[in-house]
Structures are given as structure tokens and as C-alpha cells.
Length: 416
Image 1 (cartoon, one colour):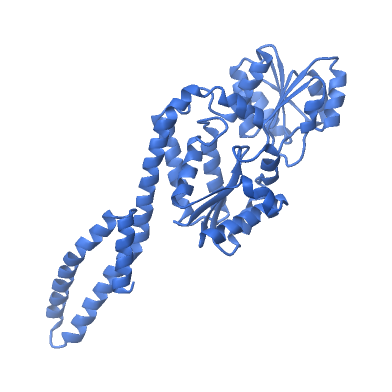
Image 2 (cartoon, helix red, strand yellow; image 1 turned 90 degrees about the vertical axis):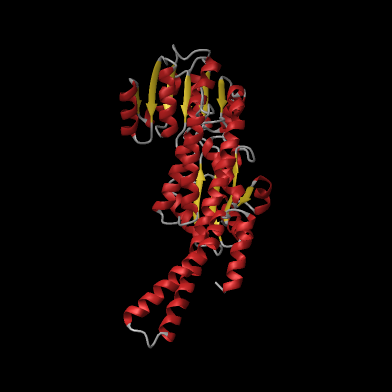
């Protein structure tokens, strides 16, 4: 298969490193073009979320592909290889496929079973398709991963209860504040995460909802839909003075709220505490704001710990999910192997047909056209019957060690 995945996730790297390696939509086309321009990579998909940045490629050679990806990650993050090596997840072939299936099913997420990741996997694949850097190897892998993610959520209870980062962020805030029903909430960011948090706030019966975004029309649309109020970024400081809770999840590549801004805000709040939940990666709020008296700043690390405490029920589903993934990895391997065998089998049978045709033409000079066609049809029919057994045996053994041995033997014996 020659599928290789290299990257970091919330299990192997802290927020500081995840921020350095995050690839936003604006940088993604250049990053993908950079990857397929390297010596050993012919296809690439980059999955960059708040929990991970992982690069999936079709590599001509495993070690060459790994070096190409690691070098790209170092260049993107401006970090030397020694600062990355201990944090990288590196897998290839069936292990890489199994890992992607794990990710699509939510088993590798900070919130076990979260459903947002399936859409993020699909989007990463679609973006790579738009950049024309996906081909016959990665396309079926990602298509199958989407199918597995859907199957797991249909056949198991892994997605029961709080199963998204956005839901978990609001639930964590509600626990800290005891209730959101009489609270004023400022939501910064209207992307998928922002919209998910807005919907969760409504379900929690939030008292007052204000929505801010870099594109004001997006803030207006979401606020109107949910009965909130849209505010401009220029009014952000005044809104922070009034709010009990700030939830933020923009896709900005630099800080949206500086330490000095929050210093000023707290002075104007007359001793009222402010809770901030920042689930953006890179972060929207200066991490140093946690040191300001009256500010409680929670981020993705805190969210992971909070979500971990609430997954006991869903953990019982993990064994069933693992069983489905194992079954699907085996099925994908068989499909992939059969797909790889098809050209070999076609070549084998075409060579045999060419030999028959050449022999009839060279030795049937005294035959009329009708007789020649009859002889050729008889020999071709006999040959097809003769080749049927080996062809079926090859296809039945696809995806197994025996299948690989038979394919190698066929190539050697018939010089294919």
C-alpha cells in the first residue's frame, strides 16, 4: 500500500507544539504542494485540527517518505528535528490505515467518540482533492475511513451523550459556573466549533448570548438564528467587561485577545470574575492571562481532562468499535490487494491471448478465414478454462501472505 502517516496529536504533544504545527486553510494548498513536490511523496492529505496535525502520504519508500514529512513539519514550524522526534507518531501501511480509521471513529480524540472529527477527516480529504494531490492510493483509504466512521456511529453507542469538542467546552463551562441560565456569554468565532458551542449554549438555556467574528455578517447570521446579539470586534473589550463567560474558537493565526486587554477588562469589572474557555489552536487568548487575578482560563488541555472524567459509559463501547475497525482494516487490505492484483492478472491473460493469436496466424496459413476464426476460438476457450483456476486462486488469496507469494511466483514464472 505504501501509506505513511507522520504527525502529532494531543496524546503526544502539548498545546505549544500543536500550535506551532497547525496548518490553517490559507496555508494548506501551499503545504500540500510542498509535500508532493518532495522526492518520495506522490499523494498527500493534511489533517490539522485542534487535537492533531497529521500528514498522510503515498510514499515510494517508507524511510524516504518519513524524512520528507518530518522535514516539511520542521520547515512549517521552524523547529529543528530533535525538538519533534520524541513527539511524532509514525505508522505505515496497515497500521497507518488502522490509525486513520481510529481517528475517523473518534477513538483518538480528546473527547472519546466525538462526531466532529469525521467531518474534519472528510474536509481534509476534499481539500486535498481540490488541490489535485490525491490519487489511486489515498482516495480509497479516506473513502473507506468515512464509511467506517459512519458504521461505528450507527452500530455502537460510542457517540452517546457529550461527543464533540464544542459540546464538551460548554459543559465544562457550565460545571464551573454551576448554571448558564442567568449568565451573559460572549462567543468569539462562528466556524464549525463556534456554531457547535452556540447550539450547546442554547440547549443549556443560556441567559444572554453575544456573538463576535472577524466577518461581522457571519456573527449576525448566527446571532439572528439563535436569538442572540451580534457585536463587532471593535466593541470586544466592552463586551468582555459585561460577560460572565468567553468562549473562543477562531481560526486566527495570532492572538485575538492580549494580556494587556484582559488586564484592562478586569480593572473595569469591579471584582467580578471572568471565565474563559479557549479551544482554538493556535490559541486565541494569551496564555499568560491565567495569571491575572479574577481570570480563569481553560484550554484544550483542561478540556481533555474534563472529557476523560465523563467517558466511563462510552468506554464500554470501545471493544466493539475496535472489533469493527479490525474487521474493516482486513476488508480494506483485501480490497486493496485485489485492486493491485487486477493489472497483474490482466497482463497474464493478455500475454496468453497474444501467444494464441500469434500461433494461429503463423501456423494457419492454409486455413480460410472461417476455419482460422474457429481454431482461434477453440484455443482461446481452452486457454480461458485453463487460466480460470489460477485466476480465482489469486483473487481468493488477495490480501494474505499466500496471495503475495502467488503473485510473486506468477511474475517470476511468466516474466510479467
